[in-house]
Image (cartoon, rainbow, N blue to C red):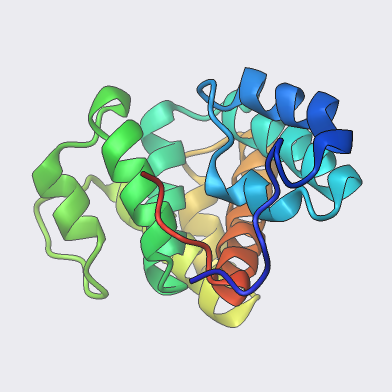
Length: 176
């Protein structure tokens, strides 16, 4: 059960425009993330704009994006993010069920991911678990990505660390 009350049209009719804006950009629904964040409308709308930019305007493939998001969610024990992304994104973004299962284990099994993806996973793991990255780990992933992509990759990892930690702290309920 969530630690703060969810906001919706009936509990906060004064936020109807903000709620409409969220619905327009989130599959037509007021998903739990925004039901919680709308306790601070400015934060909710800024959060949505930022995460939409990080998710949809970056020059990384959909597969890379989902590898990052799911790996961060695993490392931060965010069942909510794992469930949402497995249900809504992974297969359409080129990640099979078997690959998803392999990614969601602390120790990566060989054979599921190529060298670029293994370097990426090591980068995600270090940045998430240590908030720092060793030079050789950075060099290994940088061999596969441009400067722009490295910035976007690092911001994506940071954004989903923020996202998963805030959702965990507020004990967000599962989407229905």
